[in-house]
Length: 262
Image (tube, rainbow, N blue to C red; front, side):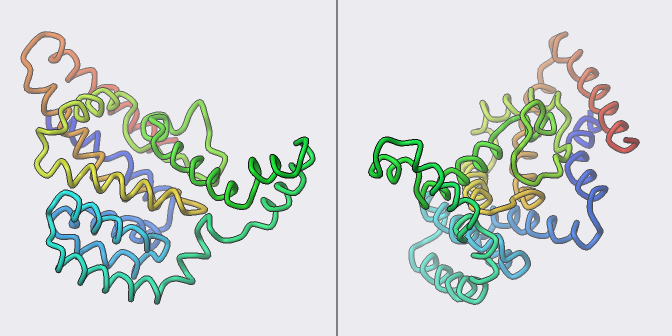
């Protein structure tokens, strides 16, 4: 059932290519490849900010993940963090201007207008303040990024408030092997690193004003989990899993054709 693996992996990169220029496509895929190579060695992640300054936060988060799971010694960690610091200083203006931390005049005016909704100034400042603007934006992005609809249903029925191409990332039926893969995550080699990369990517993307398309850095870690789920399902020899193989391939193929033609 190699066709099932191909169909699962084809959606996200294909739709990303179809909806963007070739140069833009490379800008989104190269950081994803470097993120994957970071599973082998976190040094690869240090190249990412040089290509996409918006993702400057990602390498240091990856380094902390490696330190947490004891896959890097403290001296090596400190050396790489120093290199990242130099890169971050060099790229700071490009990074900061594209994050939720940059002041938003409209959002701050909304805070001022909302003060009249409360009985006193203290409660107004407590519930609606400048820090809350950033926190709300972070929460909104994080929950969009962990929403299964983002990956299997093109964000339907709940569409995102922020700018988003709503790409077809995986066939909707792939949610079954995704859940299976997560439940059996320990069967994946370097599973702690993969989970760490997902967590680091989610945090890095959540601080951006627009994370759309840059979330392709999640493609390979999520694809590995789905493949793990498919491997577990396809190894079973009962009648139900055999039926699922053909249903999965048929539904995915129909969805892929729809993606190409529409």
